[in-house]
Image (tube, rainbow, N blue to C red):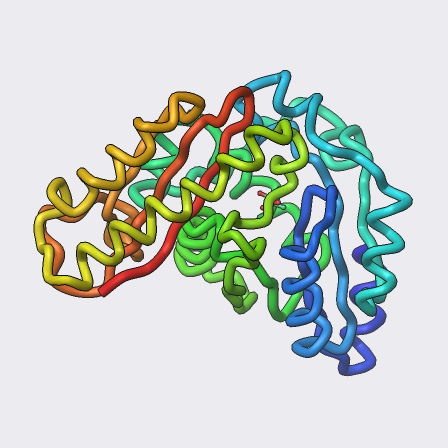
Length: 271
Ligand code: PAF
């Protein structure tokens, strides 16, 4: 991969990277389309990264279908798919990790210990191997985007991070590889998470400046659906990814909730 990328670079072509864990869907399609338009040589990586899973069962249940993913990539004009085996990327137990401080502490960082250390470490490995000029990440994983952005800034990495808007089903559910695990009943209930986030946004846009007050009706909506178990629903500063005491400017409303055995996350902006 490194030799190929170096070859393209020496002939003056820009290199783009869309890092994925496979199980590709239209959300990844949007990243690939942006990547295709924004680079001469587009690489998609497919790697289910064991380092970022806090639960073994989640790692094992993660969808894997390399043939279908490669086809998806080629239909989106990808030039190279980089799909290393776990032993290739981690030939020996990793002793070096990338730990991004403050911005990874709350929300996902609080409920999935070690998750962002795994993400930052693998993304930094991918950046070193592919040496992209640009890389595209989805806003659905807003905190991941903030963590990667901070890592790039703090470590002076020569890559531009480009955010891509969340792709949603018609009923508002954010596309995610994990949606495939929902039963028909759970799938029918799932859009409630996005509706709850929109209710918080509405409260803020109607003038609410107290985050506790703004989220209260939305929490009530989610608690009214017994299959949902909310982990967090917070109004946060989009750069710091930490809860705000008072809503005075642009904020992000972020939530994570279990629906049966599936964990969903989503967010919307407001203000
Ligand atoms: O968002 C993902 O799919 C993963 O966290 C990423 C960025 C590919 C790193 O494994």
